[in-house]
Length: 572
Image (cartoon, rainbow, N blue to C red; front, top):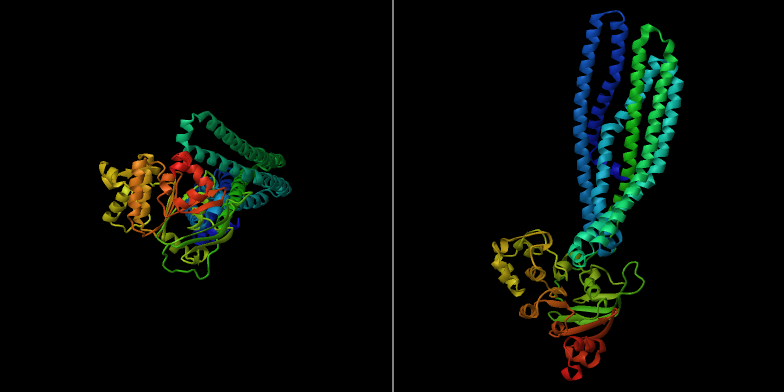
């Protein structure tokens, strides 16, 4: 609840105005039965039309005031709940952007999505219902009980017993229901994760005709969510009728005690019954709001967890802001993923002068991508140092570091929008000539210009209207537009044919040493062109040097060469 109160305090003015209208609405509801009793006891009993019309007019005025108050209350409640929901989503999104990949891995993307969407919605519903009913219900309940005792004093013991029993039921409802709603949100995380995984891999699923297996996974996650939901709602299904039954028994007892009521006070009895109905309505509202509060508290804990998440990477108090040239040194670097049982990189050492190209090759799972992820500080080394221009990357200003680096991942990630918008993603002020030049180096200019609208062609989400090779070339061009000092290419030419890949690599070489290039590839013909080659296996450096050096002294590199190019020792 601390989280909710924190955001409510920001809008305390609107909350107090809404509370004022709620109070007016509750008072209007409480006054109606009293004036109705006056009409019956003073007007109808005495056949006094004047009293009937007089009190009737007052009731109409009170009803109008209550209706206006209700409308205003709804407006302010909806405005406040939506504003707070927007602020929570904004704060969570901003904090997630500050987190390192280690934090994201631990929280899990599917869970973060659920927290930003469904969990915030739960809190919005609670704030809306609280501002609409939480204040009104106690006022109505207490006011109705007081007026019942005033109208029929004999009902005081009955009301006390009813309130005690109802309070016990409400407490039990909260105690039992709270953990169940937390479990339900976790099951929703799992369902979102399965759905997200399927949608992001739909082509692979269809290629392997694995629809049945994915359907089973989705059905299992959906079934688990439904079961958790039923467990949580079963608590409400038990206690809500018990609360209603208790209050209705109170009405029956009220009528039983009042069986000998003076006929001249029938209006008071009617008012008491009406007030008892209001007590039932108020208690039901309180129970419903508490049920919503239970879900909101479970959601607020999950949201608070994201807001409290501290970036795993430390920020230097006085970060270095010197110009980056691109000289890279790995000094006895080791790295272990959080929760992993073994190191992904072990005592890696090498030096790449600024403006040179490093080719990185090795079997699948050898740690190639892990290694390059340490350069822009997506992760921090567990041991050792990574130096850029002689400075530890952990001491360089993060914005300066990542502005000087461009990354082209193996899986090209494009965004909805025009081709030109995607190319300017890392440098919005790039001119048309600059993006065309970068696209030319990446061999993307020719196919872009052949489209109907050229650089204004609209791309769907993820570039679904492009082939794999086209997406890779646009992704590469986007990195080149940035004019980075360090260019990281993570097997980003895997979807290109040999001729196009050769043209792209020639274009990169013609950049003339303007950037230090880290090039991962599974093709030995690609890394052979690099100034230096690093051969990895199981996170351990097996060889470092030129192609000639590795052919002479690195067994794994020799095996890769023989398997791809052949010729054995004579072909070397």
